[in-house]
Image (tube, rainbow, N blue to C red; front, side, top):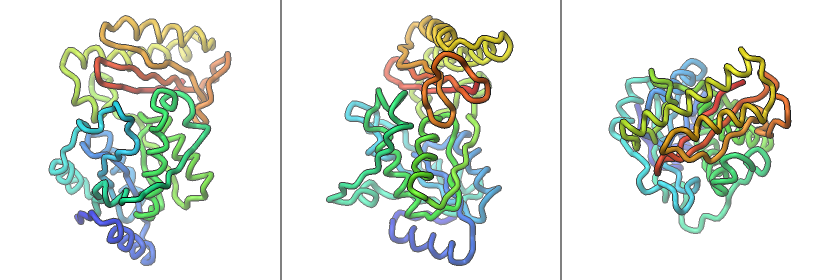
Length: 282
């Protein structure tokens, strides 16, 4: 397995792979790899000849009061996991490599990312689209694999790829959950055992919403949102940021009626100082 820090070296290597007819799969990450990331690597390995994993904690997608400075890092363990999973190249650039002095060009997607996390984190998706476009240009992937847990991020990237005619297929891997149902996330490392128990309210409540729609036949957007919000509010340390039912592709809010297969419910909440998100198809 190769580890590359230089943008120029990574780009040259990727161009060489493409010229030799190799299909490149990219798995963009911010490191602190877990089973969710590893499942995305497995998808890339099934579909591509060469798999590149980027490990880069992207400063431009963090707001000024967010957790950039304390975001968990475990590079040595990440490299071991990548090697065990059969990754071909780990691209691990520095912030100075990705954003050299004088950098001033950003990518804005102005529709899909406007709601949900786009409201509470107004500069977040600008950072996501900018770094992803840079990674696409540097690694030249035929396909890029992202996780469904970050549903709005996936939709934003898919829109960017379509709108900007980027020659890469975006593949979405399913959300990986622990045995207790909690969506696996790097930020789960922040949680104490007690907080972890309260965090389970998210997945339990989403399953309740799915049951309401599929087993009880509930179609009212307002009723499902009210029930989800109520049950999340019971958890002592949870502070709900949003509960919304949206189109799975466009992130447009559902108006009155839930259409099974088309809509999903997305939630975000603060658990003390940790921001958690989750979603489920309806």
